[in-house]
Image (cartoon, rainbow, N blue to C red):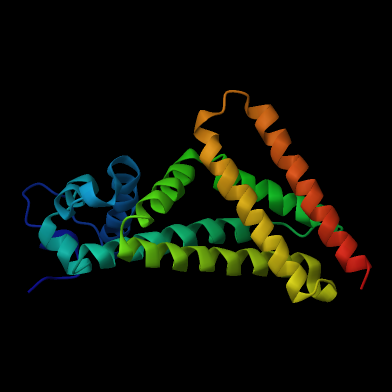
Length: 213
């Protein structure tokens, strides 16, 4: 019977780690393999080798490849937004708060090439795989909810739900479009300036909507 530690990993000379550590290593290895090889070529064997665990231990934590990728995708979203929440500080005004949040989103979702590669590969693969398509839509919806929650935290009750929803959709378009271009950028300051101009337009539109209530 398998135990809850990596002692269940029967390879000689492997240091024991806790079940939580092993699970997190597997999730991280899954994302790493996905970015490098795509979904179809990221076999359970390859992921186990990348994570430094046996396939027995891998299957103990995740019965199927689909369940493994679903968990890895959710872990990416959870980690990104937990980081955003932890780093976002209370600003003196709503415009300042929105600007700070936008800068944080740029750092986490556009300037982080690992995240960019993952999202782009994820979206491309979802066009050809029913499981990944469903997972991508769930990932997108979770992102939208998190964006909306972030905006509501900053604006309070001054912004109506339809204004929040529109801002989320527009920001999503900016993030996805610029993410696809980010790996090919040679002039990073100009690229960031372009992002800031888009953000200024969105903030201006949101603030005008709030003041016209």
